[in-house]
Each structure stands twice: as structure tokens, then as C-alpha cells.
Image (cartoon, rainbow, N blue to C red):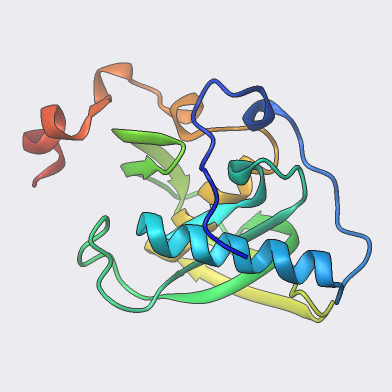
Length: 175
């Protein structure tokens, strides 16, 4: 178990839909989850999805419990293992905010997302998880789950003048 190489935008695996997990509480699933945590920690990510390390399975992890250097001051997101997730918007309100991605290194984009969602799925033991999320928490969940359907955040950007390298966008992003 170790940090793995993160696939970058353009890799064909990142464009594919992922398969559901049918067996929980297995050594293989535990190993995958540990690799996801190791990779997320090394990369200072707020979350990561299995396809980003080359595994087409419906598994994401996320969490921001301290100050993440890539997302300072964004708020608490509970550390979560989420398998076979289903996301339901709680209303139609959306918000545009800046996102980055481990698979799109050095870039940021202004992405619309639902501000409040309900998500459900399972942990690695097969126990049901159900939560409502808002703000940054809701954004992280939607971003990570998009990976399971072969979607990267640049595909959601409405105005491509709001997409580019972080250093070039710092004035727009308020950094």
C-alpha cells in the first residue's frame, strides 16, 4: 500500500464510467482505499476517486479536517469513504466557485455546482452512509463523484475565460 501515480486529464481511463462495487469488506477493497488515502495525503487533495489512480471502481474518498494548503479556509469536510454513491440535489440553487483537481495539475476553473446535496452510498464494510452537505462539502462530493462517470471539472465550466493556470488566475480567484 502506497501513494500511486495520479492519472492526468487526457488519459482514457479518466473518460470511462466506473463499475459498481459488489463485494465489501475484502482485502482488495481495503488495499484500494489505503492507496487512495496515501495518494490524497501526498498530493494534499481534498478528495480522490479510484479512476484517478487507474481503477475503474465506484469508490471515492474525501475529507478536509485541518487546513489544507490547496484549499485554505474552505471549511470542514468529514473524512469519508463513499462507495457506489448516489447524489441528489436538495434544491435548484447553484454556485460558481473555483476548483482544481489532482488530475488537472496547476489549473483552476470556475465551476457551477449545486450548493446543497444529499448523498448516499456505503463504507468499505458495506454499511450505509447518508448525509446532507452544503457549501465546500457539497462541492467536493460532486467533484469526486463526477470522476466515477468519466467527467472532469473542465467539462462543467460554462465560460472558458474562467479556466487557466492558477498563477495566471490569482487576481480573479482573489488570492
